[in-house]
Image (tube, rainbow, N blue to C red; front, side, top):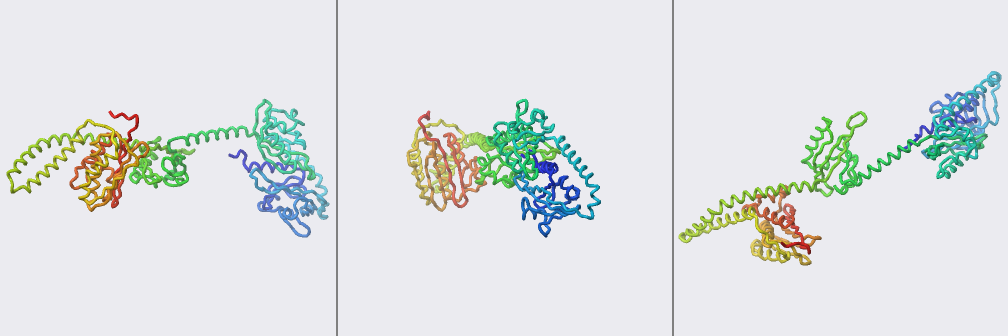
Length: 619
């Protein structure tokens, strides 16, 4: 944050040029005159307006030897102390040209300070007689004007203006300096300026003073002690006082920047506090243009979504929204924008860098400019993926409960007549020797109905769980042996890869075997033309991870979320209860199951079960 603009610095420097008693001016880096003083105008006979004509090198003609030259040419070829001749309204003058580079606070060359020393003046004989009578009067008028100009600038300047001798002692100072510091001119006269500054700033102030004495304009910050003991922050400008090109002292202007410094510190403190909140917040803070362009995202975006901040800057939110949420987002925004509503809460899915979508709950606030128009949007988002998963689990549990209640009723209504039918079929079978083929089909179908009924009862009826300590590898080995005949018949090779160490779990042996049988049976049926089924067991921290990896036809991605629902099946003769029952059993064992699939490649079911620890109770 700049406390003093470059334009203000240039105006201050112009004032110093105009206050100089030596014929002087200021040219820019292109050789155009920026400022001239009264002495130069009096010497040349040209008014200030004539010198400062736009895009002009000045009304007077400068020559070096027998050729014409611009002021800039004189600097390049001659430098300080170069002899030049100036042709002007009064004739011409032989002069010594001295120059110093002007460097303000931007640290760049801002032109040159030009001073002329009159060696010899040659009047034009035809004009001399006419001007002789006017010369004295004009000179006196110019002197009076110059004194008035200097006095007005000195006394009326809102900043503290002062002059120092070569020992940095105060010679003069204006009323503003007295007001700002609390000292009167008589109290400061002949006291040392450097000693008036804060002790920690003495070295810097002294160095800057020495450079100004050597002819280099300086701009720096320092602190001066007020008469009441407080500290005043000053931006100080120092310019050399040169007489016949010899230093005689230093002019100074002191701008009180105490209030600006305090405001700057408050701003920095506010920015620091905002940054602290932003960097330590678990919420994602973002600024968006009205067209959806991302102007800023806080650093938590890397943790939450995997992107670096630079990757998302100037991107559009629409590119990362789930396609199903785009229309809803646009409708919500238009409604909020048109009604000028207060911050609103919405839930959308945002694409993670690895491709999956993250549920985000977002509060959108409208930021208004000074005219009250909406200029941008401020969004604060929170990852609610776990909450969404919990809601889905609750919904799934409700479905299980409803399915269980339905299953209990169906099983009860079917089981009794089914028992009677099976009994009568047994009697008829012994009497219908010539119809045994039909009897066998009927008995098979009745067994199928009984199997479905038993699965319904298993889903509906709570069982007393017999949890005991079991070694997981042994359970799986038994299940693979049980399913070996079916796998051989279907030309499926089952490869069981046990863990590197025994893994003990707390489980109901029969229920867990049923889960493993369901997964292996489904895998075999998914490979009607044969294939490879790999069963692997690994330890991941405090969990046992069992994977069933087949080479079947795969499950479409849009169907993966529904395979755990009751009565959903992809098989011709499936009941749609096997996976649902398996899921329920795994949940009762405080585990979880995941599925991934790719069409034409195969499906992987992964079961996570907690390992038995020393403090696990088996009751």
